[in-house]
Length: 256
Image 1 (cartoon, rainbow, N blue to C red):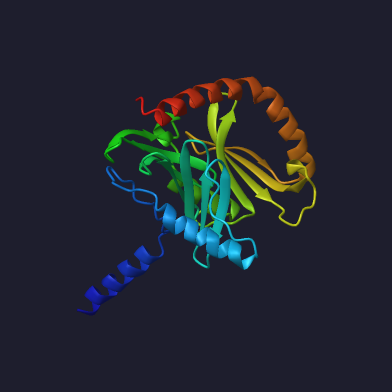
Image 2 (image 1 turned 90 degrees about the horizontal axis):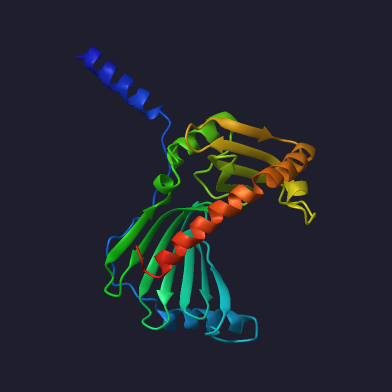
């Protein structure tokens, strides 16, 4: 009996020592009747601006407002055709961005973002049914997924991407013909207007293999490489961006 308990406890300890992913992905809906509650937003804007002595509501043509609480950060933007909201928990690296029709107030497009890049998009029809979805990780062929990236960066560089940190920037891009993750570690005390001058570290990781392609940790190297990288990749990224804009235009127009 003692041996049984010994092995049970040993197994529990071994399992508990395994690296655990702390990522909590937002739920992706397949259908929704969601509409934006503009009365609620205008009430919040009025309350916030009243504290500053200039009470107002949302400008319907173009406006932008940020709501911050102890638990979350939320933004609301208005343009000619839609309302756009973005929200995340204070320490959460996941954003949810939603596009609502100004005419019907119904949810039309929902985007899910990890740090600075979108990994999933859902488009809804007028009845709230999902009619088109894009898994951006598959679309751009990122075989080395988010969770594997988080584990690698934590293990090899001591950078925790599972929580939001304003010093850390993570986006996707191209390195020659390769799709890559780009990690920027910024000096938030830096007063320079130059991004290169405020960057403490720049890491490029292959989006397919997970292999580190660049790891620069000096301002001089980052600045020099940054200029070379932009020069060599400008035309390629311009062509790729043109295709992406075309695809996004189809999504926004509900044309699969």
